[in-house]
Figure (tube, rainbow over the protein chains, first blue to last red):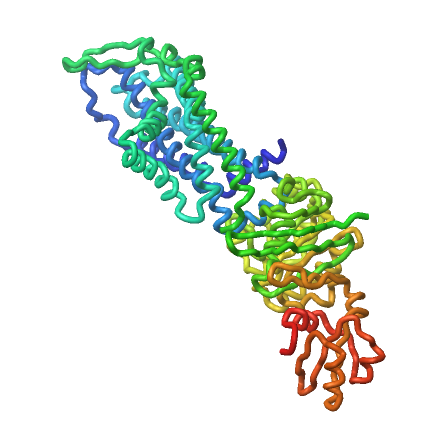
Length: 289
Length: 285
């Protein structure tokens, strides 16, 4: 357990971007809130004020989540490659830390630690931003940003998304780790080439698109798998003669039981475990480049 | 007491290239063993196998363990410096100490800090700010602070200047070595280490060509600087190597009959580096 904590700390020393990027997004957001032209924002007159507040907060969270996804992807591709490239793997392997432990520490960093940092940063930023905006543009927003229920719902939404994304994207993470442990150069290129080659080969020889569909379903399938859009309750508002549907509340959309029982989720986890075991085996065999 | 390292038919292939070809050797506890060979002889492959960094064929036991399968357990009792300057550029000196102290049960922090206190290296500096010699000092301080039974050094002084080299070996012999430890060291700079070794392993083309203690070398090998008129008689005694040095012909003999050899000229025990040259080049030079 002690070793695991040191391995995570190590990741913070090596990858200072883990906190620098969210700090930078936070700074930019707060600067925009402080000096941006928010008093004169062109919001349609009949647009419901609470929805504006909701939109604002979701936009901040989504920015963090998008950056987190990009960074975590890059991190996973780099983490088992960088130390082979600079040969420091020879130092890390001289310590009594198993390769399984090493690979799992990288996985945990990408799937738990980085999301936790971004979640905390997004929360803090939203709070400060809401405060600044409310003070500067109270005429426009009023108390729209300050509903305890809205905050609670957004917390639940983002946490739910982080957890389900971690489970859903386990095979993708495992694949990235495998490439990172294997490639001798150009990890990014190597991460893209095999699926493209497989898709082309399949099309060439069989004229089918099974692999392309599997990959597409995995990359884009999370919202459909994790959220229950049919049962969810919607509010319809008429904005300039158009009906706009917004979620009435978040709770009815969350479907953890359904997500976990979904065979696609389970197949994904299984594939992820296999790929991670493969990454560990490669890590054992490959030292410096 | 069983040997610390026991290799039987140790073989390592990279595709068609055979780096280690059924190598047999053993290393006893409390010794300083030099694994000596020309470039590409299989030194690094042998070390990689011993340290559990690579797969291999044949049988290999290090401290009673199978290195590849049990690397992390092995690293409780063994440590290594494989090449200089492998500490990552982003790592801070104090973090390096914290980390090793955190994960290694046999690491003695006081010893590492005492070793570093003798240098000009301060804790907040990152490896990228240090010279190659300083980085080696940090790595050495980290490694020597581990109470390990086996220390493996692979070309530990490559790229260091003469002062740093001698400081390195002084620290190794004076501050580190005692009877509970064993050091396995590879180098192609034989002259640099021959005074501190107790045993040598010569490796060439993936095979062990000599496995001997230095005491045994003295009884097993002899070199004779042969006087000009006795060359033919000396050659008849079957030297395994001859070499012309400063105008004199030196013949090398294995299992020598010293009385017989004394008749040919001045007999002496060859130095490790001379023996290395003699063993590996064979025949006449």
